[in-house]
Image (tube, rainbow, N blue to C red; front, side, top):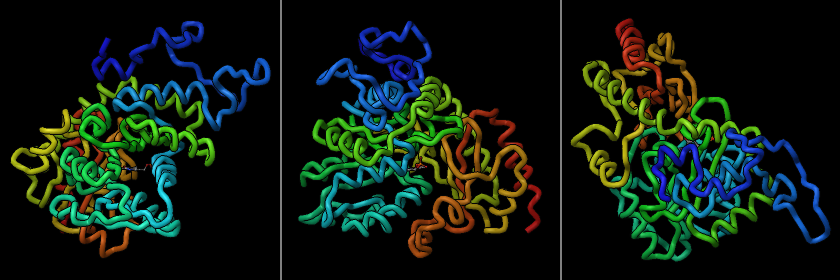
Length: 384
Ligand SMILES: *Cc1c(COP(=O)(O)O)cnc(C)c1O
């Protein structure tokens, strides 16, 4: 039986074949560090929770199913997932990465990975000749699409062909679309990253991260790394993410519908100069998304007249908090230049378009009218 994605948020394809846990509909939280062995050389399948825990395993099966991977590994945060993934490389390896990425990922690459001997070329994937950047020691291409925060969209199939021609890996951070709207593994990627803190968890209450792959050899390496470095997701947090995923389909649909209405409102606002949202028809991002995704998501980045207005909005919205993070049921406004991207060198940040007039909004599931009214009262009350 091949289930549709909205159903797969609630059920595994082979649910009846796995243990039934006394028929519990909500998967139990196995709050245990260790497991008794029946005798030497025999195991229940679980030995120690750093290696694996039944609740984490259930979550990993659900996420692997949603992303069409053979394996998904759950970490204590998105950054823990990316940090662990970097351990598959060795000193002297080279990676080509998107110049516009989540600030924490840039901080990891620039400070920790470089110290460990990895080399990076940061490229503008919207117009650079990526293939010409491949070197003898290049091992992977690392992208986000859409990117955080500038919403740049990359054609995953096209980049995967470059990767395949050179025998290198394609890694895609799919946090912004979630598996509900986009499945990079089906488009030729080898590894998918998620900050499960965002849309998968969906409630702004838990951190989590995932590495998903459709390659046996990589799954084996990631399993060895998680067991060794010990950054796996705890049982209770695994359960919270499992619960969040049950409503992924509903949340993605509602927040996207809200985002489309908010974009329309922003387009009518003369003090809003630029809107970065892939669902705007007539843009290149829109065309690429149409080919490779089932939607556009609910992240909007926009540039206002000046920094004073940006700061005024952050101070005067009543409903929408000024807070980092995204992908939750509550709408949030973020100021990338002092928050998510504060540690990105200023020159790089400005080159990517992240000025002090740029705001990023993660649209939640409130009623669109209320969100628009809140933004409008904040913009209208500016006397600049
Ligand atoms: C938030 C985020 C991360 C980091 O995830 P955490 O769960 O906060 O550690 C990585 N990539 C993207 C695109 C993100 O938005």
